[in-house]
Each structure stands twice: as C-alpha cells, then as structure tokens.
Length: 198
Image (cartoon, rainbow, N blue to C red):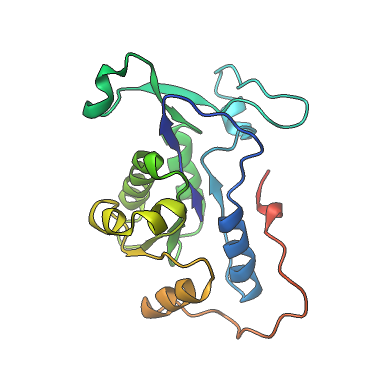
C-alpha cells in the first residue's frame, strides 16, 4: 500500500494520515493478506533523518512541515513564480523501501487532492520501474472524482472508485489474487491500521 508524494507549491501536515488506506489495510489483514505500507509523506522516516538533510520542523503536537525537494514545475505552472516541490521522502528511499518488501501480488496506491495527481502518477511510474509485472490499483479521492482522467493518464492497471472494500476485493479477485481466508461477519467495526505508521 502506498501513500504517494505531494507535488505542489505548498503543503503542511495538520495530522495528515491516509485514513482510507489504513482502513483498507485492516480489511486486507483481517482476510489474511500480508500488508506493507510505504508512506511517502512520513516526516519521521528514520532513514530520511540519517540523510544529512535538516529535518522538517514539527510542532509539539505532531503538526508541521514535510520533507521537501524543489523540482521543476509542470509547463502550465511555470509562470507562477513560486518554488514548486515534491513533498515527502526521497525517490531513492522510496525505491529502497519497495525493493526491501517481498515482491507484492499487487500495489495499491491512494490519492488525495485532485490537483496532487502528479505525485500519484510519479509514484505509480516509480513502482512500475521496480515491479513492472505487478498490477497497480489506484483508489482514493482523485480517482473517485476524476475517474476518466485517472484511467487515461495515471498508469494504473485498475482504478477503483468505491468507498467500501468490496470492489477492491473484486478487482484483486479478477487479477487472480484471493484472500488467504474467508471473511466472517463483523461484531465490531474495524479500527484503521495505525500500527503500520511509524
């Protein structure tokens, strides 16, 4: 599961967490899937802290800045006159994280703001460089609100727009990826897999 980079002129962490992705993680874990999360926006990533770059400033209650690298803006935004940046961990660390995981049966990428799609596209491109034969499934807010755009341009093999997990499980099943164990009725709601965050 991947929480992608943000590409924008500004971004600030007000307790930003990939809640939908963490809900999906818990559902997948409950069905017996082994789940690995790469949070590209992890401001506390230990290997980024060892990189020599000054860490982003964080407040006492967990809010603050993301890791940031100034990059060239897309052509339509070049006249803005402000620095355009990739927010999150380095591409090198992202690649190391992907390679360190056991080769996945599928890669699930979430998306947040619609105008952050360049970070989503780059995340998918980088993941496919390392695992070209692993299907990528895109979901989240951008995918739901801009479905046709996501299907045409994202590079994902599947785009899932539903807010519940059934269509995702169906997409996995269509790809020949079945849960290790059958689902059973829930007596209590599932809590998001916050334990996957560090």
